[in-house]
Amino acid sequence: MKHDTEIATPSVVESVKRPQMKPQFAVLIAGSIVLSMLLVIVSMYLYNESGAAQLDLSRPGYQDVRSQAQVTERFDGIDSAGEINDRTLERFDELYSEQQAKILKQKDGFSPAVMRDDALDIKVE
Amino acid sequence: MIFRDNTYTMKQISLLIVAVVVSLSVLVTVFGAPVRAVDSEQGQLKPGDTSIYNLVRMDCLAVKFKLSKIHEEDGLLRVTLGQTYETTSSKLMARFNARIVENRLDGAELIRLAADYEDALDTFRDNYQKYEIEMNSLLKADCQSQRQTYYLSIDSTRQLRNQVNVDVQNLNKILGEYYDAFGEFRASIEDDQEKESNDEA
Image (cartoon, rainbow over all chains, first blue to last red; front, side):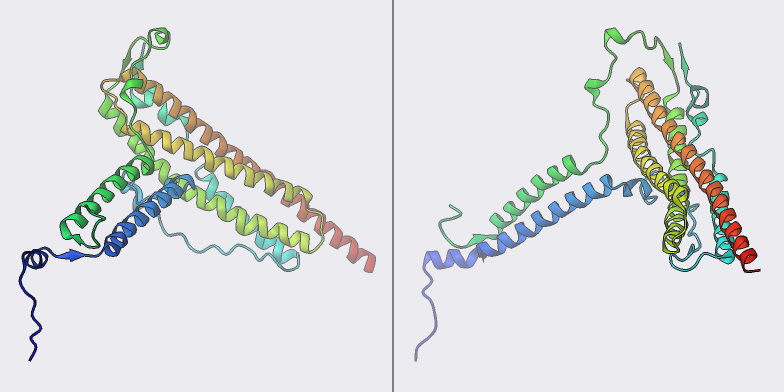
């Protein structure tokens, strides 16, 4: 009867003590990390360059105004196809005036006055 | 040593992974950060610049607090105003102009104004982006030790914000012109309809 045993030479004992790992596994782990880091760099670049960063109220520094950004009602506008008659013209007039009124409520948007020296309490001599 | 045999120890693998992660984290920090703090070497004004200002007095904390409030409100305004500008362009102007073309009517002025509006909207977006990036840098810059430079940065941010204000006024002006042109277009349609009904009579 044969016994499936190995003679316990020093090299065998050493290899049993140290867990072994194949190189492909190391490459897989390192490769996954490299790829995910590269994708993070690309997506951060696109996020900043596209202007999405300026519209992102979840960024730090906007916490006080976040709640004021209300979910607006869905605005369907008018259809792009169809005839132009009195009803269409009336409808367009109504919708356009409504949008224009919304915009003109904030016609002093980005007013220069708030950043003047006196508004920031800065004295220059 | 590593490449002589086919297998690795856990310790070697871990060291390799840590080395890769650390080097890539440095890369991400350098290339991913959208804003950099003001370089302290750029700090003080050079002797030739003394004509600018002799003394700038400001409470840095108070100024930064006010600037951060302005930054917050501008962010909210950009979102709400931007939404309305976009919907007016895409769901009203563009669609109405498409209808004019489909019905083979003369709406050249409306189409021209819609194109001007789109250009103005692009300009607004670009200028706002520049202003916001500058404002972000300003909020993170050192005010206490570099007061004069900080004041110059406030001034340049102010110029960018004024430009955004000009863009908003321009957009509102084009909106008004489009509405006037729509009024003339509507009047011409009604005139044509009246002529047709008179001819039939």
